[in-house]
Structure formats: structure tokens, C-alpha cells
Amino acid sequence: MPAAPCAARPDVVVLDLSLPDRDGLTVIRRIRREATTPILVMSARGEERDKVAALDAGADDYVTKPVGLAELRARVAALLRRAGGPHADREGVLRLGPLAMDVARHQAYVDGQPLDLTPREYELLKVLVGDPGRLFTKGRLLRAVWGTAYGDATHYLHVYVSRLRRKLAAADPRGRARDLIIAEPGVGYRVAEDTDPN
Image (tube, rainbow, N blue to C red):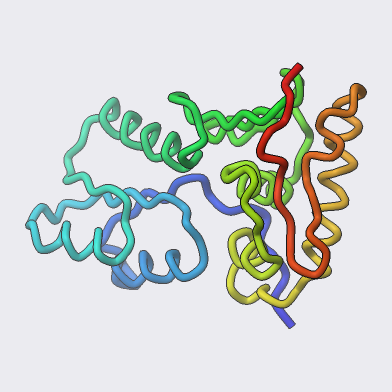
């Protein structure tokens, strides 16, 4: 039986390799086993071998301290844009019909009105909308949103998809978002690739 889920996954991890109680590379590898969360290493270690080791372990970017606040903000913003996936626009916003997901602000909208989503609901919707038309198996969705320990907890997925569908339907009285999430019985879920925004 998996442990109780945590409240939310971070949007970006900023990590120093020199931690007081463990090696930063170990932390990177552990995060990568559980999630695709962008990782920015910010470390005083400036040797090429340190940078290569961190990037090989799964870090997405590496900056040597000291670093200016403006550069740090720019690097985090770039990671958030990329986290939106190949279907996001230049601001990192995913758009599908009446639905928009602002990855940097961790907020979803229907026709410009914010959706009241829990962190898990948001993550589940982001995974699906990030690759429209792609069929995600139940196991893959569970691992992406809840972590590897939840690969068989399909009841979580059923409950969260039902909640998402209700919230999308309530936010869109014209019904365009109601059927956005499509179930493939016995396999998983996908979102419609072509959704008319009008």
C-alpha cells in the first residue's frame, strides 16, 4: 500500500550539490526516478566534471555561484517554459480549445476564468494537455503524477479524472471542455488533439 500522497510537486527544483546531509547528485537521481520536474543546480563547484556529472545525473541546467538574481530568474523562467512541453507557446502556456494552462503560474483557465484545481488535479491535467492526442496508460499517468510507488493505484486515477471532468464541465457552460478528457477503456486516457476554440 503506497504512503499518503504529498500535497504537491514543485514546479522547479533549485539544488546545491553541497548539501549538509547528503550528496546533491543522489538527490538529482532520486528526483529523476520519481518525476520530470526541472532541476537547476546552483553550486559553487565550477569544475567541468561537476557540471557534467550533474547534467548526466538528470539536472536540466547548471549555474555557478555567485549568480545574479536576474540571471537566476531568467533561468528558472526558461525551465518553466520548457516544462510546458513542445506544445506550449513562448510564454510556456499550453492551449487546447477553451483551456489554457500557465505552467509558470501553476494555473489553469477555461475561457480566461481560473479553474480551482488541487495540485494533483493540475499535474494530471498538465500531463494530458502537454501531449494532445497521445494515449497515456494508467500506469504512466500514475507514475508521472503520484510517483513510482503508485503504479497500481488505478482507483486514484479514476477519482481524479472524474473530478477534473466535473470541474471542466462546470467552468464551460457551452460544453466545449466537458469532453476534453477521453477514456480508452482498460488502457488509459488522452485529451482530444483538435478542439475547436470557438
